[in-house]
Image 1 (tube, rainbow, N blue to C red):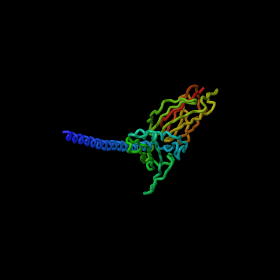
Image 2: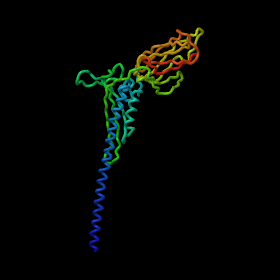
Image 3: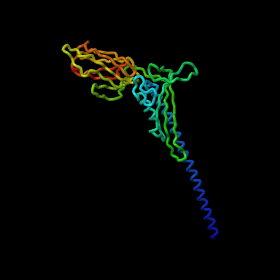
Length: 294
């Protein structure tokens, strides 16, 4: 009986050892497989992020390559980072998922001129309205990020996903205007920020402000109107009612982001009060600037 008991105890010990070994191997396979699946999900979302950024970029390409660290930062009076780059960056970041290290994400934007000759390699160019040929040239969005590993056997991996699409831009069509931000007050003026199908009003001011009226009802000086836009704008005009119901207008010159014009203060009779200068692009309202006549 004692011998039989010893044999059975030995068999039980071997079974336990086999179970432990098989369990460890199975655990390793399952855990590593899950980690690789999560990494694959991260790669898929990275591709989606690059494509989504490019979709935004084909419409908002002007100044899209102006951001800190890029060779084209600040070109053509573009902000750095520009509003267009921030739109692309935000769109890309929203698509990232999985175990992505958020702090590691970098979004790069470039524009490429596509020659009409077959087989010619696209050439790098600045994302500028006067340079880009819409319907032909490409915008490239590169999303670089690091994925965390959930397994000690799989290292953290860094990926770069790229998407290229043809730039088409957005024209100013009709009077479709969408408010993007609430009224912002500064020491010189109040401006309302809005956009008309890609043409975004960023800020504006009038100088001098306030301005006084002389004895004949004329302004003591002309009004200089300065406007900053996203860059996708054309044919900017400033219009203001002096108080008699007939507007005084001024064509704004400049671009692609900075515009200036002068409103004649002596052509009409002005009355005291707050006046709203309406800014239009290709006939559509994109924003307002307020001024005080005293």
